[in-house]
Length: 266
Image 1 (cartoon, rainbow, N blue to C red):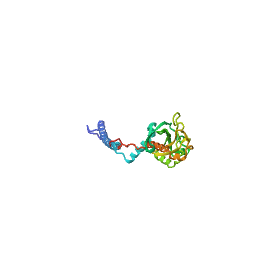
Image 2 (cartoon, one colour):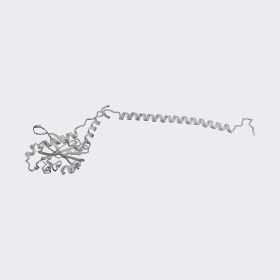
Image 3 (cartoon, rainbow, N blue to C red):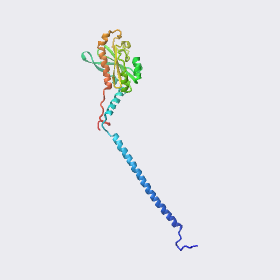
Image 4 (tube, rainbow, N blue to C red):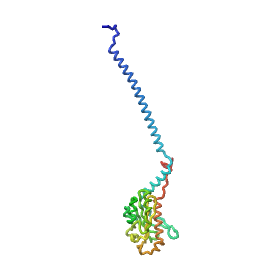
């Protein structure tokens, strides 16, 4: 057996040192790789966050409304008025109308009826049509003219949107004997106003609403008791129609649209 010169035999401690050195070098290499990967991940994350922040700022910053956004704002505002406004906002205490010789006069509200299902507030032939086109509810109030001679019930049929309302008005009859059912209030001058006392009825479309009007005489005269020529030429119907048109105008009057997405400053 070959003998090793003194002092040249490898020791266990030297082998361990070499192993430790190799492990250390491998660890250094792995750490560099890890740091490099971590840097890449952080760089990509930072880029994503930056892009998202830029996009969010671009989306949320105040800017001018587009024409489509302006129209949508108007439609949404008009469509919620029947709920957003108090009942006295839908049916003002006084409504201006034109009397004889186009004199400005004012009708006075006598009372506001509870909100009604569509089928309960109009004649049956009209109710079926309203239901078919998605009528939501009907609001009603009764007025008397300035001379306290005529009584007028105004009914606002609410639809889901203007398209539904247009579909309904394209099919609504022009028969002036049917429409909204009268609302009378006991103990007032309107207490004799019922279905038989309706002289004429009509309607007008406005936004997602159909505004019905029906009118009669305070003294309770029935339609059958009034000659046809008097019904056609009486002051009663122009006043009633004007009152209904005024309420329709209030409901569908276009609101002021803010110029920017966050108010008046872009």
